[in-house]
Every structure is written in structure tokens, then in C-alpha cells.
Image 1 (spheres, chains in turn brown, purple, cyan, yellow):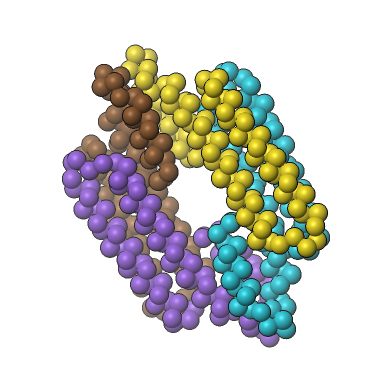
Image 2: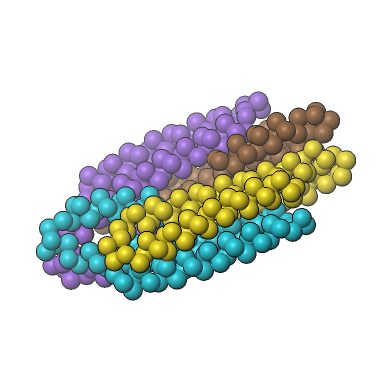
Length: 87
Length: 87
Length: 87
Length: 87
């Protein structure tokens, strides 16, 4: 993975981590509202999906344009279909 | 939300946070494999969904059995349908 | 399930079925664009989720307000948590 | 899209359509169980995702290996990231 993609993905994950911490703190409050917690959890999942997109895009940019010269187009496609299960 | 549910949800979120940290460390490695990162991100999303289920179950256990005496069954249903969007 | 919910869910499913038929016809065209097909498939999945919401809401309306007198609140909760996996 | 992919996707969609029809018939029965209907709807969504994978794989096989000579790798990547939103 290109350095730029790794850094951007790491930055997004760091934000998601902070968000998880704030949800943990929310749960200290006996009056916390169930739907609010669920909404925050959903927001973190969206942020994680965003980090996953950065990772996948970095992979594609590193490999699609050179698949021809490496002769591994079919292998790349299998990887992509595999990656799809995780996005 | 009942204390027991809040504690169990917080514990699951703390595990998810540790998992996010380990993915951030993975991304320091220039040789990290894209599909591995995506798989780990997906695992964290699964853990977050598990925390969400704990939250929702706590809410249901606190409210369904007493909806009749409170007379707010319809309001509870609206909340549940709302909560569903976040699970 | 109440008759009204069954009818509304069936109506939504009939629309989804018509939508699936139109995608099948799209695929007769050699020039069909991949992303368009995926977008239509996603739209059908959204319509199916909508039908699922109608079904779940009907179930909740039939059961939550009477859980107390039937004394089966816990059973209802287990059903809901099970239903959640399918929405 | 290659003919083979279109035919296989269409076949899967025809099966999904038949499955939707059987759910519509299930809903004629006043005794139908909510969770069963939701489970069947989820199964159809899985079948539609399978059809989407066939479509995407056909697109990738038609385009990745020739992206180099066409010089449109970046455009292909944008398409893939767009397609991802629908899978």
C-alpha cells in the first residue's frame, strides 16, 4: 500500500478510535438514551467504512494500471472480489 | 439503560478500541496487505454491532415488560423502529 | 401478523418483483453498464428492507402492548433480537 | 458486460424473483410468522448480492487486464469505487 493511503487510513482510524472512547464515556451515564448510543455506534461504523475505502483505493491505484505489465490481472480481480466482502 | 447492559456494552467497545489501535499500527508497515486491513476493519465493525445488540437488548428488557402499565407501547415501537436503523 | 401489515408488505414485494424483472431485461442489452445494474440491484435491496420494516412493525404492534397480559415479554424480546438479524 | 456474465446474473435474478413470489404467497396466510418472513427477505437480499458479484466480476474481467492499453486505469478505479457503493 502506498504511504499516502496508509497515512490517510490511519488518520481516519484514529478519529474512529476517539469516537469509540466518547461512546464508552457516554455509557457511564445511567440516563444515557439507547437510541443515541446506537446512532453513535453507527457513525463509527461509517467512519470505519470510510477508512476501508481509502485502503482499497490505495490498493487499486497501486495495482490496476500495472496489472498488464505484471500479467496478474486475474489475481488482482480475485483480490478485489475478496476485498469486496470486507467493505 | 440498566447498569449491567451499559457495562457490558462498554467492555465490548473497549475491545473494539484496542482492535482499532492494532489496525493503526498495522498501517505503519509499508508491506501491509490491503485485504488484511479490510478484514480487520470488518471485524471491528462486527464487534461494534455486537455492542449495539447489547445496548438494544438492555433497552428492550427495561421497557417491553412495563410498556402496558406505562401505556406507551406505541412510543416504544417507534423507538424500536428508529433503533433498527442503527443496528 | 395483522392483515393490514401483510397486505402492505405483499404490495411492496410485488413492486420489488417488478423491479427485478426490469433488471433481468436490462441484462439482455450487451451495452448495459455494470454500475447501472449494481445500482438497480441495490435499489431492490432497499425496497426489500422496506418490506421487512412493514413486517416487523406489524409484529411489534400486535405484540408489544399485550406482552404484559400474556406474560411473554422475555420471549418477545428474544424474537425481536432474532428478527433484528434479518433486517 | 460479457454475455456470459449477463446470462449468469440474469439467471440468479430469475431465482430471486421466484423467491420474492413465494414470500408474497406466504403473506396470504394470517398465521405466517414474522421472523420467517424476515428470514426469507434476507435470503433474497443475499441472492441479489450474489447477482451483483457476478455483474462486478464480469466488469472487472472485461476491463482490468486491458486498462493499460486503453490508458484508462484511473477511470476504471473511479468506476470500481462507485460500484462498491452498490455491492
